[in-house]
Image (cartoon, rainbow, N blue to C red; front, top):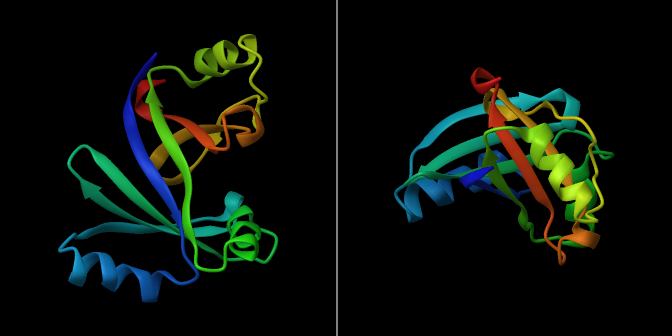
Length: 137
């Protein structure tokens, strides 16, 4: 079951350039940075109430974020992530409703979470992530 919006993923060309905007212009505090080699990105997280902003910087030209930035040179919202109490059950529900899955099994993402994505061609143009804390497993 979906419990809440976990985070919004925002593609940026450079964390070093983008983080100061969120800190200085918006007054948010970067909670942590992390590299996620499996997705070829570096991330920076900001809490905004119960929702997080996840800035995503590509570390390789073949990363999904680099490809997104090719089509959207200014960057922007890349995905929305919903927190679930069971990612695999949520994937089965989505597939049963005719949604195309990018990932049939969850994998380890940033911030110690298991994640999987639903294809934007079957989610009305919105790349959708389902995630859960590994501690919930």
